[in-house]
Length: 156
Image (cartoon, rainbow, N blue to C red; front, side):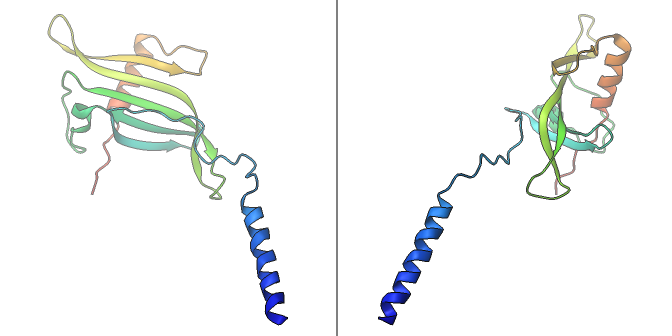
């Protein structure tokens, strides 16, 4: 009789745990709101701007990623840099942690050759949630300098 009772209690507890585990997780989502498909690009560096509540990742193609971190670099034709900026959002699984939210800006700098043979960076905004424009030679030049001045992460 005692063994039947223990078996009954064990069966009841097991069944209730099983049913609890199969319940709805209330659509809990841990992944970022927007993912960026970097395709064949490599991560060059990352940074947080807590004042603007953004997270940025600078990607580059094979040529851009092969530039040494501590080198004063003369850019080569074919280098491509893509700066993706996300809005920060709190991490629901880690108190005080920040993760990427929605993408706010995607900027691209390509190093091209002009007809005269001179090397010139070309700036392009491929996505922006801002309503104001970043066009204009002064502002574009500032953004180019900012993107190209970022130091590469040293991998161990």
